[in-house]
Structures are given as structure tokens and as C-alpha cells.
Image 1 (cartoon, protein in one colour):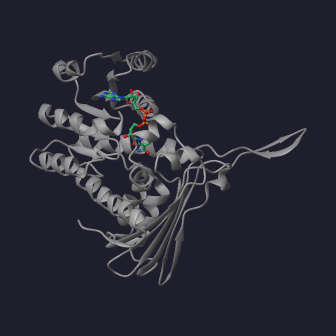
Image 2 (cartoon, protein in one colour):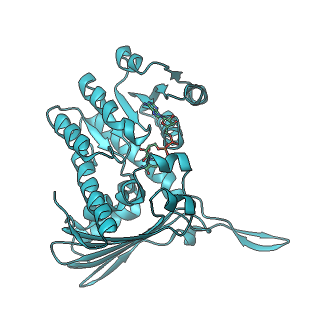
Image 3 (tube, helix red, strand yellow):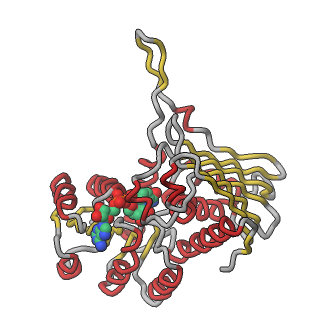
Amino acid sequence: MIRFALFGAGRAGRIHARNIARHPQAELACIHDVDRPAAERLAEAHGARAVPDPAAVWAAGSIDAVMIASSTNTHVDLLREALRAGKAAYCEKPIDLDLARVRAVVAEAAETDVPVTVGFRRRCLPEYQEIRRRVRDGEIGAVEVVHLVSRDYRPPSPGYLAVSGGFLRDKTIHYFDLVPWVVGERPSEVHAAGSCLVDPRIGEAGDVDTAMVLLRMPSGALCHIHNGRRAVYGFDERIEVFGERGMLQSQPPSLSTVARFGASGIRHERYPDLYGEASFAGLLDSFVTALDRGQPVEPTLAEGLQAQLIAEAAVESLRRNRPVTIAY
Ligand SMILES: NC(=O)c1ccc[n+]([C@@H]2O[C@H](COP(=O)([O-])OP(=O)(O)OC[C@H]3O[C@@H](n4cnc5c(N)ncnc54)[C@H](O)[C@@H]3O)[C@@H](O)[C@H]2O)c1
């Protein structure tokens, strides 16, 4: 049984709390959030303890792992505490917004044998795992083009956006991890374009909500990512990998839409974010199982840094409106 302390009782923290509490090999021992009532509400819902003083989490000695799902700017300090206390950590993405701090904590972790993973949960979706396996088995030959579309249902709250680091670092980073993981090579160059089309407040804050990113791989393969913060019909995500001998394509979520037949006609319900549900639970399960069996965890902290380096180059490309070479 892996006993968890959870940091953060917000959007991600609530999902993690539910998944930890449901997992047969995990237990949610305690929750800390600077918003004390939020921690108390969540703790009560899952039979856990709310801990007002974060130092008490480390002093307690009764936990095996921490789930870091607090705001992005708190991750590195919490990771450092976890490394010092020898507690396994699941850290939400991105690791931090300051690259120097990310590099420092990755180096610190490398000096220990504490297992640390980063929340790139899409790796746990069976359809993406299947596409990766078949690409790596050579089923479609050499990869030539990757085409990826991801649109959220609606943008997160202004409070979240203000500390998120911007669209490319906060959201598109998922695909900066996913694409190299699927095709087996990391991009050498990135060219990003972005617009603010969804919410003018996002533009006023200097961010974009609609992005097109082109990644060039060392093999010459090209990857196009279209990432958006809003789709009125619900969450939408799919990937297509095209190669010399064919194409592998995940199916659009709309194919699973539930149709309701009523007196007023036939209506298709908005697609629920099943990808979200399945992938959060999937990555937690893979982390808990690896800890339980003493196996390495993944995605690793170093892979978190790799995705972040691509994101930083993309931000620079967007700012300068030209392709940027990615330095690893
Ligand atoms: N993997 C994913 O797909 C995914 C999805 C959503 C969010 N996230 C990540 O999870 C993190 C949290 O996002 P969110 O959407 O839950 O944000 P949120 O704003 O809903 O919640 C953040 C919570 O952290 C708390 N907090 C702030 N400082 C704290 C501290 N020092 N100690 C403890 N708690 C503290 C806040 O009070 C708030 O309740 C972010 O890093 C985000 O990028 C990842």
C-alpha cells in the first residue's frame, strides 16, 4: 500500500485525490493546500487528514509518496523537500517556469535514487500506446509526418492562466512530450505561430489561445501540432502518424458521443473528457505499480526537462516569428 500526501486541492488535486482514494494499492493520508478550507473539504470527501502546516507532512513519517498538484510555481520547492525526505514524487507538469530551477532540481534528483515522475498522462492512453508500439515495430516504415490536434472544451480560469506560464509551456508541453515518445526521436527545430481568438483577456495578458507548431525531426520527419483552448462541441484530440508504408490514426472522440433520442429530436451530447479521466487514473496506476514492484517510474524528471526545453524554444519562436533550433 502506497500512502500519499497530496499538495494542492484545486482542479488537478481533486482528480488526483479521487483517483488515489479509489486505487486498491494506494491510500490518501493527508492533503495540504494554502487554501485551508479547500484542503479540508477535499480531505473530508475522501476520509483523509487536512494538514495546515506543510512541514507536518514531512515530519509525520507515515507517507511513502507525494502527489504535487499545487500551482506550478510551487513544484520545485516541494520536489526538493521530497528528495530530502526520500519520498517518491509524482509532480504535475510543468516542473517549473524557470529553466534554471528545473535544471537544478533534475540534477539534484539524479544524485538520489528517489523515484520521481512528471504528469504527462497522455502516455497512458491505450490508443497512444498502441500507435507508439506499432510505429516502433516499423509497421508504417519510416515516419514522415505527424499530425496532432488538441482542443480543450473551454479555457481554464483567469487565476490559473495568470500563473500557468502561457499556452505553449502549460498545455502544448503535453505534445512536446508525446510526439518524441511516439516516434522515437526528439525534434531539432521548432516554429510556432499563435493567436488570441477565444478570450481577449488571454491576449491582454500577453498569451495566445490558439497555436500551430511545426517540429522538424533530425530524420527530416515533420510534425504539426494544432492546439486550442476552446471547442464548443467538447474536448477534441487526435493524432495521426503517416509513414512510407501507411498511416496510424487515433479515432476522434466524437465517434463515442452519446446520442439522446427525445420528443424534441435527436441530440448528441457533448463529449465528456474521457481521455482526461482515463489518463489521470492511468498514470497514477503506472506510478503506484512501479513503486510497488520497485521498478523505474516514467515519464522521468529528465523527460520533463526535455519537453520544457522544446516549449522554451517554441516560446522564443513565437516571440521572434521564426524557426528556432532546440538546444538540449
Ligand atoms: N497533467 C495535466 O493534464 C494537468 C491538468 C491540470 C493541471 N495540471 C497542473 O497541475 C497544477 C495545478 O493545476 P490546477 O488546474 O489544479 O490549478 P488550480 O489553480 O485549480 O489549483 C492549484 C491549487 O494549488 C494551491 N496552492 C498554491 N500554492 C500552494 C502551496 N504552496 N502548497 C499547497 N497548495 C498550494 C492553490 O491554493 C490551489 O488550490 C499546475 O501545475 C498545472 O499545470 C496538470
